[in-house]
Length: 112
Image (cartoon, rainbow, N blue to C red; front, side, top):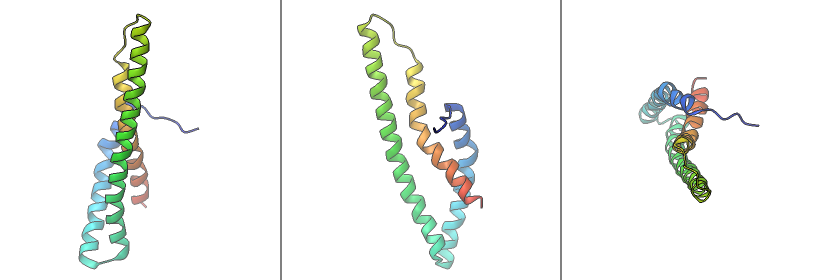
């Protein structure tokens, strides 16, 4: 079973590893422009494709979490209970998780 990371570790991943991934990919794009290498061009193309897919995945994850939290809040209100602010953290964590997962994977791959 996959281990879910918390919001702090996802934010730390984005804070520290994202600049390294950006630097490695910027170098690959520069090399692709200068040399016309197919490998470097493929990395530049992969970067754009992954970014679009990650944005879509984050939007879906955030919407699903929002829907789940709104149903939980409605059920709590129907039961006469107050909803908590913890739902906001779960929505934020769900939205960040796909980006952080991809940044970690790209950092590992590009570090080789």
